[in-house]
Amino acid sequence: MPELPEVETIVRDLRPILAGRRLRHPTLHHTDILRRVRPSRLLRTLDGNRIMEVGRRAKHVVLRLESGHRLVIQPGMTGTLVVHHRRLTAVQRRYAVLEAGIGRGERLVYRDVRRLGVIWLLDDRGWRSYTARIGPEPLDPDFDASAFAAQLRGTRQAIKKVLMDQRRLAGVGNIYANEALFRARIDPSRRSDRLRPQEAHALFGSLREVLQAAIAAKGTTVRDYRTGTGQAGSFQDILQVYGRGGLACPRCGTRLATTHAIDARQTTFCWRCQRSSG
DNA sequence: ACGAGGTCCTGCGAGC
DNA sequence: TGCTCGCAGGACCTCG
Image (cartoon, rainbow, N blue to C red):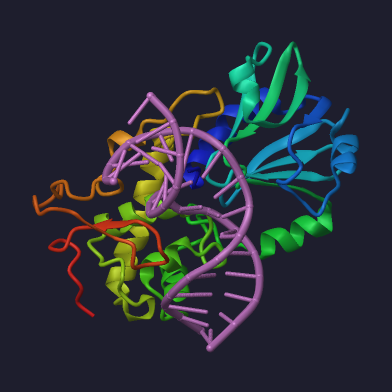
């Protein structure tokens, strides 16, 4: 489930390979992941187009093309973007959604088992409105603890839901919301606007720490996620709460609790360490 | 503004 | 053994 660290890993792996390459003979195996663009126009625009820049915004891979378009790929739950050095096997092709030659016998392949991912082709204006709808990047040096705290003050929703709200904060999903809240010792169900300034500050620090650590570990592979070179990430070995419900809290030994009360998503936390105090 | 719930999609594992 | 069903949860939607 690619969140910010996973997409950042993909982008860092792919950038040196893709920058400057020309896309050739793109093929689309499923059209249900396209938004606001017809398959024929997508393929026509991609064919022969050069990749100028490989970037990330929130949980999305952004390929800036010579034509001025941006190919934006949201991997959703199970999407992966990988460069293959040889022809795809039948198994690899099975979930391929979009593939294109990039020269030197290599192919860029977007595969997505559940196809909850989305592909956009945006011109400049489309890109501006697209990125304007997404919140600040948590690792942006210009985004600081006080700006983060200001975001949290604006809503009464549960803090965990706020962390995952892409309009308020870019790139954080279920795994890293759980981990950051644990590290900051904050109850995930706490009202966002009731966090004390020092709690918001601590949460900001924890969030940045866990995102940086996950990038260093090349992301978390639970099932489908792969790096840009097709490897599994390793942060799953470092997770402290996500997926560890019923096991001992790594800090105090209490059994970790799992609930689905917040946004119907799996929330795992420690009753003792993340005690509610407001 | 907010919570609840539905929608998309497929693989997987539990339970019968 | 083989079936059904619930779950995984990102992003978006509607409804009250």
